[in-house]
Image (cartoon, rainbow, N blue to C red):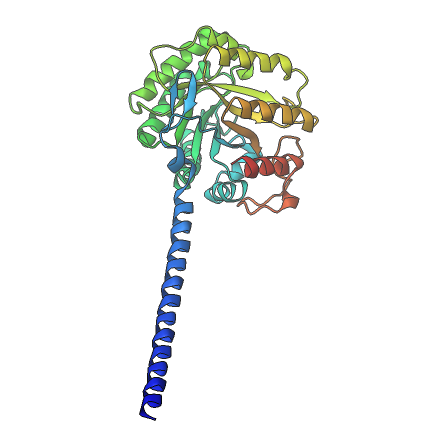
Length: 348
C-alpha cells in the first residue's frame, strides 16, 4: 500500500514538473517569437535605400554604391515647383511615395525662369525645395535637387548661389544628388560644359563627395557628344539622359546615342522619362515603354519618372483633384500612375 502511495505521489510530482516545464517552454517560445518579430520589423525599417547603398560614387564609367555595385535607383519626379505641381511639395506626399510606390529616388524639380520660380522668388522656392528634400532624407531616400531650367547658362550666378547654399546645407549627407541643368535646349556642348564646370567648382567648395548630374544638348539627348569630350579633373560626375517612351523620334536612334555614350564609359542617369510623348501628352504605348524599361534594366541605370501632378495629361501620375497629401486610391491614379506604381513595386 505504501509503495502504491509513493508511486502515485511520484507520478503526481512528475506530471506537475512536466506541466511547469511546458509552461516555461511555451513562455520562452512566445518571448523568442515576439523578439524575432520585433527584430524583423526593426531590420525592415532600417533597410532604407540609403542604408542599403550608402555613399554613391562613379567608378570606371558607372554609378555604383558603397559595395561597388550599381544601385539602380528607381523613383518619381515631382512636377515643376509652381503651377499644379506645387501643392504636392509636402512631406506627406514624400512619405506616401516611399510607402505605397516603394520609390528609392525622388526628384525635386525646382522651377527657375517662369513666374513664381527661383529667379522671382528665391526664398520661397528654397523653402519649398528644402522641405521635401528633408522629408526624403528622413525616409532614407535618395533625392535629386534639380535646377529645372532650359537656359541655365544664362542664369549662372543665380545657379552657383543656389547650389552653394544646398551644398552647405547637405554636405556629408549621402542622400543628396545635385542636378545642375535640367534640359539644355539647342545649346552647344562647350557652353553647357563650361556652365557645369563653374557650378561643380562651387558645389565642391562645400561638398566634396556627393554625385553631381550634368545635362547635355538637345534636352539631354546628345550624351554621345558629351561622351567624346567629358568633364575632366572632377570626380563623381554623371550625365542626365532623357527620353519619352512613346515619342516616335525617341526610339532606336536615341537609344543608339545612349548606347554609344555607355560604350565610351560615360556614366548615365535617367533623371527624367515619361510614358507618353515629349510634350508630356500623346499616346501611351505599352510596347515601347516595355522596350525602354528593359533597356534601363539591362544597363542598370537609375531613373526618375515624370511626374507628380494632377492633370489630364498622358505622363501625369494623378487624376485631377487627387489628394494633395498622398493616400491616393487606384481611382486617383492615371493609367501612367497605375503603370509606374506597378513597375516600382515589382522592381524595387
